[in-house]
Image 1 (cartoon, helix red, strand yellow):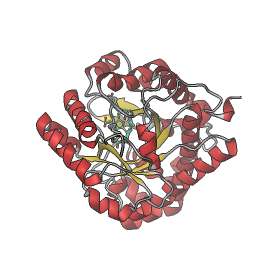
Image 2 (cartoon, helix red, strand yellow; image 1 turned 180 degrees about the vertical axis):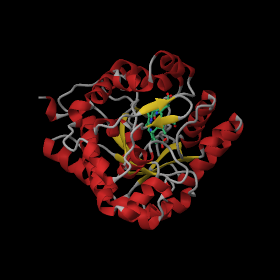
Image 3 (cartoon, helix red, strand yellow; image 1 turned 60 degrees about the horizontal axis):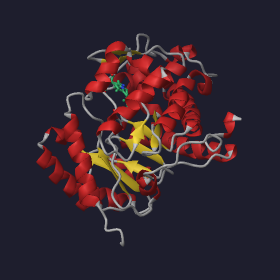
Image 4 (cartoon, protein in one colour; image 1 turned 135 degrees about the horizontal axis):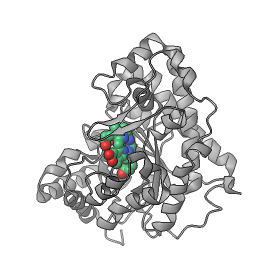
Length: 367
Ligand code: CP3
């Protein structure tokens, strides 16, 4: 019975559980490190796969998604791996068309304009069926990764997804979607709730398929000020962690650590650290010590190298990594970037960051 979840699937034993231990606040011999968007266009081997395959075809083909997920692990000494997919598969599951335009990014040919457009959405969608390819990719990757490190699943948070669905793509001001919040607050909540329920099912299905941690990306948190964030983002972020955990319990599936990344929501660090996520992921605009004192000792912090620091020389990257280790300390910290990799990053510079974090955070084994 596959509904029983990942304890019925048998995977190779995990050889490196640093990421899981750090997420749970346990002792580690060295700080675990991975990078948001570590699978992607800065890797020539990824571009080679993409040359013959459209973006969403890679997402929908478990063998291809598995292959590009594993690519960065072959190059770097990574402590975590994130499944290749996209946050926009959820709007697709709700019935929207999304295209990935080369050089431009995601585009919705028919974005939601008025609240009446929500009638086009499939309120009864069953992601466990429509997004089954994601779960198949996760199960396949858990087998192929052979216990090298834990595998993360992920989803976009409701506010960030609502932004894409209404703006039709990226935006500078996000004025179309913010207009909804002011002019149609009721319809906005209805849409956010639909997204939240869909995301809960999507995350639970990823965990049942073998994801060992999950990260929720609220990448557009910063475009909301505190007032809108507390009304239209935070309640759904909290709803999702609560419901994911409840659903796992009722299925008899073991809980996994959950990570919240609300980019540029520094005003809400205290609330985020009390939202039932084991890990709070930080962008680079926050001082590590300040974040620690505001978040308390009961959450693990993740982050927060400025992705642009990877343009520096390898020597400078190593010295910045050393500083990060000194300010975060070695307990309850997962080293990562403050946002994702950029297409023009030199892969070797990511390697320099990973190696430096390991080198400077190594703990004597008797401590
Ligand atoms: O390594 C990984 O992190 C693997 C999977 C992953 C992708 N997208 C693959 C991808 C993850 C975790 C995402 C999350 C995602 N997608 C977010 C949240 C994280 C963030 O960066 O804020 C967002 C906002 C999206 C939506 C999206 N998808 C955008 C804005 C773009 C275009 C611009 C960009 O940053 O690349 C994508 C395309 C996309 N998703 C690519 C990849 C590897 C590049 C597309 C290509 O191959 O042409």
